[in-house]
Image 1 (cartoon, rainbow, N blue to C red):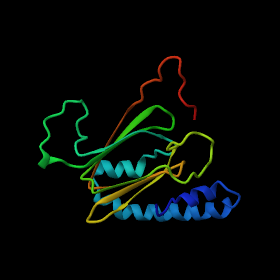
Image 2: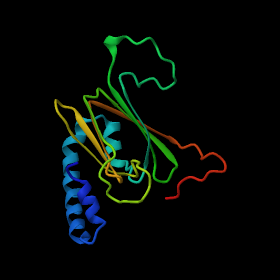
Image 3: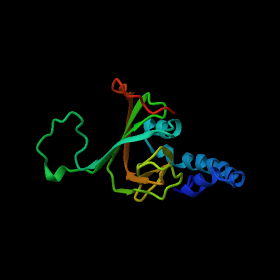
Length: 183
């Protein structure tokens, strides 16, 4: 992460938050300028997503990585080993619990994950990703894009890709007798 670093996020929630907040504001402005150079190279739908959608405080519910994740209905065809293509799919529950966003990355050239991360906000909970904190879209190598996500646990995911799609669907209600996490 270049603009929204783990240290800066921790600092804006600390006693030195006044200085950190000023730095945060400068980084937000720098990141918005940066997006003006990256987003025009993406599809219109991807541009809209990375400019308009915030998954802040959302929950990563699923991460799939593999050579054949495009099938969503469980109808697998015999795999032609010469047609494998690495992909990544993230499912993220919105902060209000109303929607699930499915992010799909195709023509993936790199995936990095740091889990568990260095805890930013110790909470006493079992290790988990925690809330989706901040994410950045930047340019990677050879014309690819990089999407990097920082979670409140300090965990990170970095995906380098050429193509991106997403969809949004209503979240299923929690099973009866169980309450969803309040926000």
